[in-house]
Length: 374
Image (cartoon, rainbow, N blue to C red; front, side, top):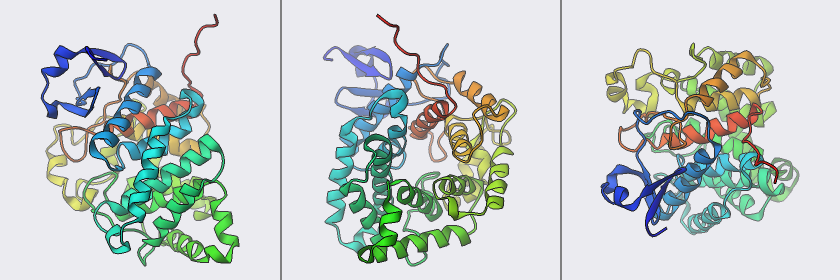
């Protein structure tokens, strides 16, 4: 690829990409050059699984290659979402799992006090969650690396049952409640892990830590409606976490946010002051569409996933309307547009805003077209 650069499913001449400044790219590493996401990017004439898949693959590899860390919004999302898409897209790229194992090894060497600081708790949690998803959807068996990641995750748990957070980058690195739900899903998704730690005296400390986490989620009121969606998602993986009445109330809360066109908007799930401790309130209130924010790929895809995992049938009229919105809203690069809650620079949330719609489509029996028989 000496004369071209790839963007999603598009091929861009090297002359064009060389005219762009470094900050014009959302992801850039070696031959990968993905321009920033914008609201002005044209909508595709028809849905392309290949373009979306290419964007996910390249974005994750570029982040890991350039940034050398685990991030909730990119390679963390790849590892927690892409394994479940194996049915539609084939097995995920093993390089992503190997990177997570490499980062796990580095973090295990850190002192416990240091692991509780900055973004390290989130990194440990996403490593555990990503490896658990890989085990559940790719190999079908609990791996030693996932066991190590879960053990490390619970070893740095706070006394209240959750973990430290920077509380500044909504919706992912936004609050301790979010991290607790991801940790719960990691534990519940890892094949046989909860059963194993509940039955062995050697793992009694991990089981106690798990119970502490469950107690936190049962007793700590969600911060806003987005937290309620995450709690509902966790309850789908951990059925005894909530009562049936609580699950029903959370599903009603989620469906009430659906817009007339079938989509959901992440901006309607929390007041501006509630995101990241209020540090984004001024930006969000200044947006021209603040009173009626448009639907986005992140929230629409997530809403469908959570409702499906909680037993709502794919044939449900609300889900079918949302699926139609997804099928007619993909952008030319393969992404679905989602405006960042944080800055108007890179809009990294378009990454989850693409991964979530793909899984939502798969869960509603929409799959990529099969190659024609030879």
